[in-house]
Image (cartoon, rainbow, N blue to C red; front, side, top):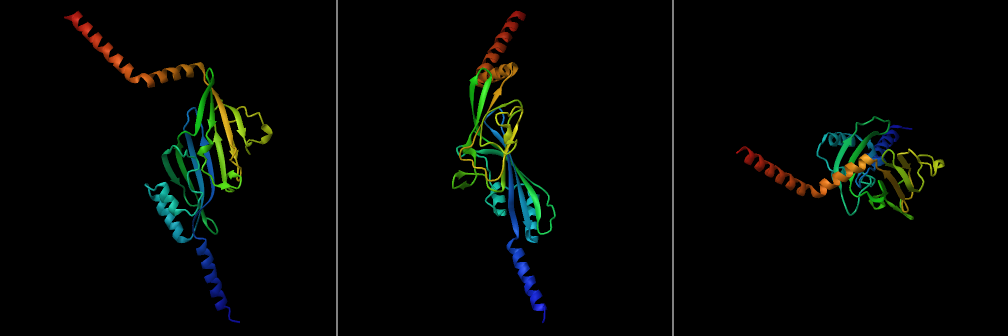
Length: 255
């Protein structure tokens, strides 16, 4: 039996299969939301890319070298609905978006790379002054931009969500319980600043809030900072008047 036709057919079939999987695909996304003492969140999303096919490898290398690609440009390159901002207020916006495409790591069937997207999401939380020097921050779940399941919005099977809070902050409410730290630490999250939920976690009833207690020094600085912000023009006007008055006084004294 002549094996050449069979080998040729197998080669063509393998080429077709390889070509069908060629492209740049997103296989995983790790989203970290850094919450602070204001309502803007710093978001860092790391997308794991699978790059297969010579043309796709060349395209990724070219795109990686480009300096002016936007989110829309990358979305045209990547074959996945996972590539988007997962933290954004529909009534607000994101700002200071930067892209950091990493080097290709050579694999057997395909190469991989990490694409980091760094941005700031406005109005990611709300703050309430609950007591003297105590401020409670409530995470705004409307900023979630994840797919919907039958039970509502949920993390995809290839995604992870991390929330970071300031050092010294106290968790006030959290649901569902995070995968990390261990659920055995229920009601005992003292000194814990990072919480993580893994693939498939439902988000429809997600709740997360924490309390920040200001020191006396921080309260004083915050007070005068607010005074300056609210009365900056008045303060400048008063300073100008004082300078003029002092100038006139010294002029008349030395005349």
